[in-house]
Image (cartoon, rainbow, N blue to C red; front, side, top):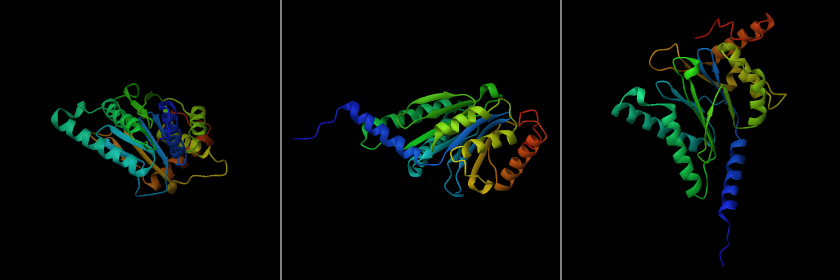
Amino acid sequence: MPFYVSPEQQMKDKADYARKGIARGRSVVVLQYDDGILFVADNPSRALHKISEIYDRIAFAAVGKYNEFENLRLGGVRYADVNGYQYDRKDVTARGLANVYAQSLGTIFTETNKPYEVELVVAEAGTEAASDQIYRLTFDGSVADEHGYVAMGGQADAVAQALKDRFQEDMSLAAALKAAVQSLEAQDTDRHLEAKSLEVAVLDRNREHRLFKRLPAARIEALLGEAGESASDGSGGSGDDDAGES
């Protein structure tokens, strides 16, 4: 006689399995700053990226199993390229891409034995901060419209709480990066993240055409040093000091 598992228990087991897999990974944070959207990942690898460009104003960040979120990233790039070519580049939006990812993840979660162990953020930089879009997608296809900041993977709750305490609207790039790094370090009080162990990128609304840009280790180190100097000068890392942004 075959072993019976109720649909409710089956869905719960899948969800628990996916959550455990995601929690084993290193964290990623996404937050707005005065000139765009900042992505920071605890990722020492120079080849296996957690943060990538999707289209002109859209970027992608993920945690979990690399092969699974890389498949999703490639599918998103193809979706964006085809729609931008058939219609207009402005018709490719983060919301449309988030809907496509939600359908794919939802189908995989309900119709396969093993769900994807991934969590995603799809972000689009608008012409001003109020028009920025940040969507968080979980392993079951759920979508959340986020504002200000997002933390995923690892001890995400601890990172999110640290971000909540440090985040301010209209932060400079240096201040936002410092807040992100300190929030990632909040998972382990004994850990200090150096520039070479970070993957950092921005959607900079001041750039033309393609807004995505990766920051090299030297630039990351300079920004962290700038944020430290601002704090020692008593500015508190607010958005009033935006020197050194790019």
